Image (tube, rainbow, N blue to C red; front, side):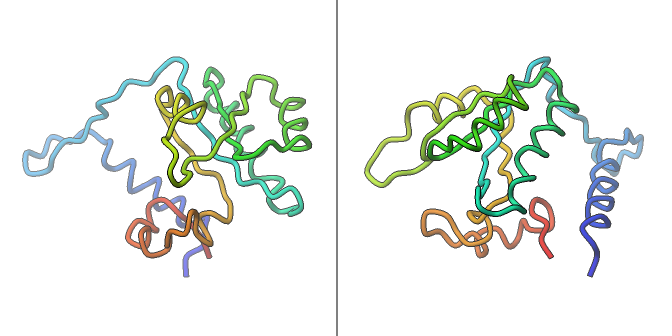
Length: 157
């Protein structure tokens, strides 16, 4: 079984090939259609379990990578419920990150408020690690729905 590192290398190489200009008329030329925005808006969905020391590095680590790689990005950290201890650490270490709160789905309620506004502005939605992807969210069987996409978007041993 390939390691996570091997998976990332192979994924990057296979994606890079599609961006390489080609002159072969039999192969379609893939060119990016979107130009890079100067100040992209990124929603980072956090599933940080405060009591799990393993989870405590995921969100800050992802924010650090984003702020170093895309310094002009506006990062919206999405928490479902208020989390005072976590939010205190985020504000201290990442003062430019905005924390948004709300549920994506509640039976019988329309999708509106702060989360909807964030999605309307966002250029990228990044789902950080968490139990929702591993064990289901809102009673949905993520494993069944995402099994065909697993090699592309979700890496798990």
